[in-house]
Length: 328
Ligand SMILES: [Zn+2]
Image (cartoon, rainbow, N blue to C red):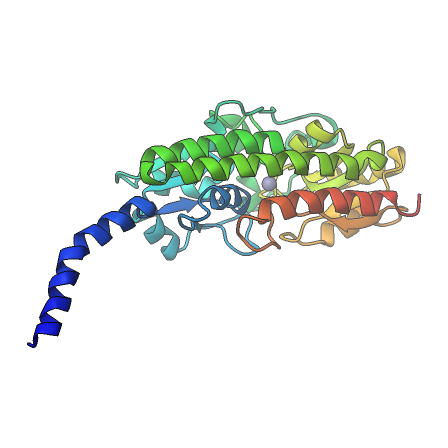
């Protein structure tokens, strides 16, 4: 070894600890974060920007209502430091895996976040799925969601909590708090990201309000009863849903009730969802003047990431406006 090489080696050994220290201060290693569904994943991804990327369980066009776990999901959960999910009554597929996780992972059920406004499942009229007794006796339909809704402790609340930007704020605050506690080295970044996210959520809220103002009094029919929070916030007029929950397919009586409701209220639009067969939508539309549109409340068609939440919410407003304001 010549002198030059020796000096190089010596200096690199000497400075290595300092380099580690500096790197550690600037970017503590990101925690391994797993999130159940796209809208929540989007909020987590916003808050983790510049630190790391959370992984997602219900990917692509899958629906949380009908999802089943893959082996890759199970191993992601096993390696997780933090798991965010909405809670019992929405991601049923996660209940058992989370119970048996038995590791040091912190599991955060976001429907417990302080400041959330929670609405009860609604019943009655075209929102009542399980009392009309005309469900077919197929095995799959016997395990209908009505039971889930009534026998679960937390099942009395509508779990589509994210469809109101004010609830997104409450969940984002809980996400930021959890991340900052688990990873204090990056706490300043999480805090700055939360502030930026809150600013964007406020703007989003105003944009949607402006978008839907002209169509607030126009009744419409949706595919599944996912929109209560959106309605509550913006006072749009959902007149009924084809099914309360996609686990349950509607019976003939419910379909004819919806059909009658379209005629009676003069509902001009029936909205399908990309994850589910549009056949039922066509059945209720038949013989009416109503048109069909598409809403994507669980963001099945959108790419996961920080922008998804905003795209999902804006596109619900835009789809409502476009279908409900045309031709009437
Ligand atoms: Zn849903």
